[in-house]
Length: 134
Image 1 (cartoon, rainbow, N blue to C red):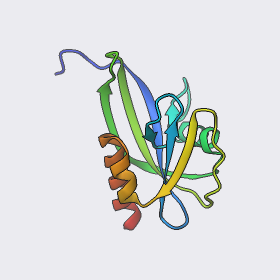
Image 2: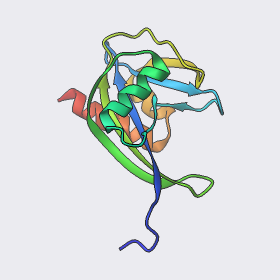
Image 3: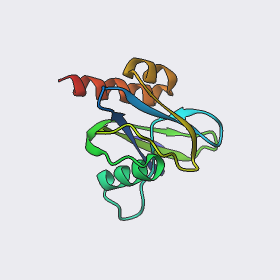
Image 4: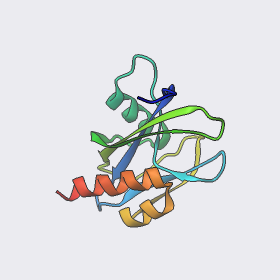
């Protein structure tokens, strides 16, 4: 048993595959880092609906949310608990309309996206790609 149970904010993100099997990454306004689109789950919110809502708010894209491909927990620099769930998503179009939370976006090969992102998000891209290729 874990000595210190994790109390965490839940983060939902999408690995969005476009029509040419590229993956969408977005650049944060706060620190210029790259990430997968998504955000925090609301109270009493269904997880697939939450990831859809966050992606729509951040990118303007109407996506198909598929199944989760990766989940991970961690503590951030302030020692706050985080729990992230990553969903494979399909985007039938590539015309992105960014919210104020991001300054740039890029559709890139899954391999390049995995290299640009954090280890956890890169792992989510690789797992989503494995499922996407089946």
